[in-house]
Length: 194
Ligand code: ATP
Ligand code: MG
Image 1: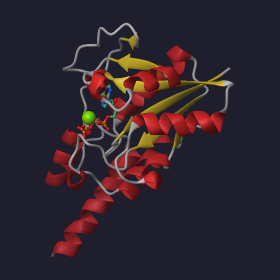
Image 2 (image 1 turned 30 degrees about the horizontal axis):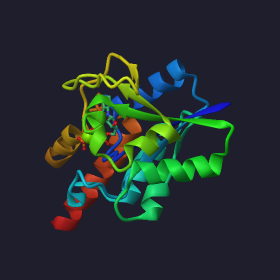
Image 3 (image 1 turned 60 degrees about the vertical axis):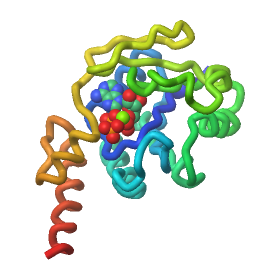
């Protein structure tokens, strides 16, 4: 059986906290691959506050390039509209066949409202749902989840975006290649404005 991690999020932008979760998942669950799936749009976030989808994908590629087992999927961006995890898992399962076990990787905050997601029961049939620690949230007590406590980093994309609006992004928050691309984009926007 191949084990594949599916890690969804807006990744606006990807940061070191995401990468730590993916590394822990790969080693502790023995995953053959982790697929990062950036959302098109979600009911939870105002799309105007997100970086453009193409930029989010580019930053992910940059952040993941050293890990052959970490990939980016455009499945939700190409599907367009509102992204639902159940649709993505259904499609990934269909593509990968019966010899694959999917692990849905989630930070604790993301699972807090799992009961209100679209088709939670079907999600649980399609994948093993894994909850990782995140500062500020408790690991959910739901026994249907695999719970993996970890020393999570106190980083969010919101904080990275805030820094970006003020100038440069701290390399403790994002990998240096990502910081470089973000700085280039910011300089470009400043030039356009002036
Ligand atoms: P935003 O501030 O825009 O919500 P975010 O940092 O929460 O961004 P998301 O793209 O919303 O990042 O999250 C994608 C997934 O990664 C979610 O499951 C979330 O819980 C998890 N995650 C994000 N940051 C961390 C972190 N520092 N530690 C553990 N899990 C994290
Ligand atoms: Mg978030």
